[in-house]
Amino acid sequence: MILRILDTSNYLWAGAFSKKVISRGVRETNGEYAANQAPIGGVRFLITQIANLLDENTVIMPVFDRTPTIKREMYNEVFGDPYGYKGKRPTKPFDITLQKEYAEQILRDCGFPVQAVEGYEADDVIYTLVETYKNDFEHIYIHTRDSDLSFMVSENVSIAKVGDKGKVINMYNYNTMADLKGCRYNIAHLLKLCRGDSADNIPGVGWRWGELLDEMLPQEEYQKLGDLDLCRKWIRKVVLENPLEPGGHNLLRTFNIVCPLQAPVEELDDSEMDIDLEKLNYFKHDWDASLDVWDLEDQLLEYINQYYE
Image (cartoon, rainbow, N blue to C red; front, top):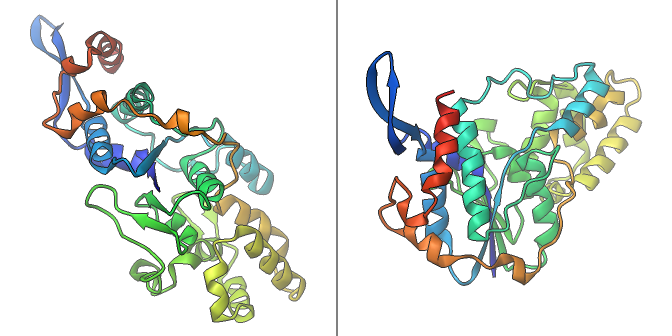
């Protein structure tokens, strides 16, 4: 069996630029009438892609973000800012937020083992799922465009595309990574630790620590860097051996913010992975934007009303 873990936010963003809409009558504004429509391109793209990936030998686990309160608490303890973690990112567009909620509802209705844990972001949940199920499946594919997750690549774990976008990263091609100046894929998280990450609002600990760590690790050990506990062990070792280097006390704390956390996910049994293929089959063909075939038209009213509030 194959496990495909989907970072749903990537799919929703990729499809959000589509002009697909759902319609419910008309609305009146200043005496003029217009179609009562709300965008749903992201939802359509996500579900269509899932339908294309699903077969009898595949389990699909869609993963949804929650507000990363755990990481924000950690960030506040280290840097003294309760909203600092990812705090400089612009607010998500309203229609993306609503499409996320609606997509999760549809996938749960279909019977997919949707994964989301309060207080944790999708990266944390994806990392935990890989650690939980890596010995239970022949291969695990992580569908994401986020290179931060590439450290998990191993003999039976690969990074896969989101639709037709993104990179395919596996044990056979991880040796180079153009956007990180030729580094191996599985040390991307260590480079992020050293140089910082403006997207997550994380200051770097300095390239000197990266150089010291690189000097300590033999090349053949790089394939083990997906083991975060082992990474922490190496970091402790390099800090202890270089007590005069500034910032060593902050190295592990920053590393824990940079890397995914273990989230409290519950393991599923086979009965919780039964998919309603009759519903899903509607999306393998030309998707009906009105969703009449789903008998969910009444549920769209709240979505549209929220969109126009």
